[in-house]
Length: 165
Image (tube, rainbow, N blue to C red; front, side):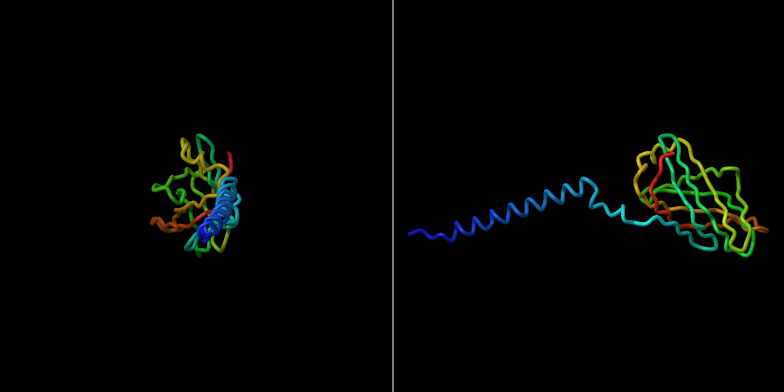
């Protein structure tokens, strides 16, 4: 009579098709609710190159009208340094934002002294959308070494969750 091979093949494909569809829906739901976002599992870190290093503490904060970044800077130079500026940008942005240092330039003694440096920037509506998200920021710390008028810089990255000001 009739050959039943076609019906068996169709039942096989239908059964596994439903199973595949369930897997796709579950993966979509887990992704939508943030279970599969790897950013939650990346540790907060601050890394600077050169003779100026992160001293431990760091933070990036933002709201609708301003942003603030602060970090502890360790001077591993043999001479005193004067931090003159901090520039920061989100990893995928193209231009750096220059932060105004609170209280002007910050002087840090030699031999590993750690000092907190904080900068503010106003009218930065672009960063308000990052509040609560873990982001990677490129950062440049500009400084002059005591006895020199030539500026130096140390670049690096901060990985942290942006806090609400």
